[in-house]
Amino acid sequence: MLIDLYCERTASGLWNEPLNALSNAGFLLAATIAWHARRQRGGGDIWELLVILLGGLIGAGSFLFHTFANSWSELADVIPIWSFVAAYVLLTIYRNTRHDLSKTAGIALGATALIVGISMFTGHDTVTSNPEASRPLNGSLQYAPALAALLVFTLLAWHRRHPARAHLSAATLIFTLALLFRTIDLMSCDVTLGIGTHFIWHLLNALLISVLLQAMIKHMPPPASPD
Image 1 (tube, helix red, strand yellow):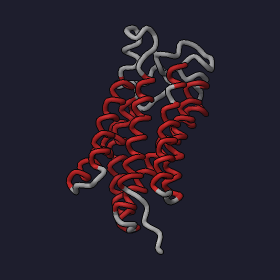
Image 2: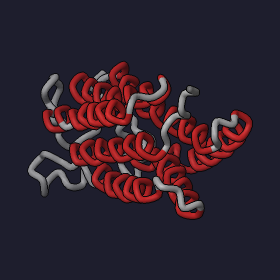
Image 3: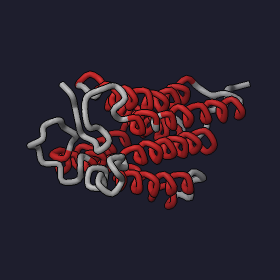
Image 4: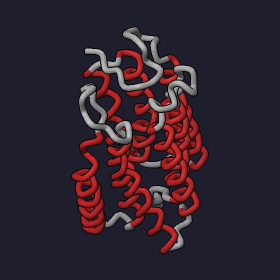
């Protein structure tokens, strides 16, 4: 079954969303830049490499969704996104608690409770192929928990004067702007001559991933190996 949710798609076909599909190259670029930054720093642990890989897979999954536009490709789109969010949050918490597993588990549970709590009020706005479903913000409200979590971590970083606070602030602003372009995609269809703004959501999210990965690599490195 074809999933038609975006301004750019007007019919079935692999290349009916060219900008929405090709703009996902930004995620691969973000992951490549992060990989090189990691090498220049002197390497790191396998968990950091996994987070970088998941950042690149977001682009691959989204590319599949905007070409095939069906149920299995929708899963290929969603799974890498939330896997990246979970892996990034867990790794950064673990490193900022100086690798204390009990503190990491406690903070992670709190973050999970926050996300689940917000999701209870925003779940009705999830992306769906059902044309009768209510999506007041074009499905963007489903990302409210991620924005809330990012805002909380940014405020905590400033409170503790963490060296990554500038990166996290930039990430919060970028994600907020990205959500705006995702939300107005369908309503901007006439103004943009059938192109829409969803591809800008991709480009800004690729920039977001890049900023978050650089924050992790530069300001939250893995523990030094013993001599």
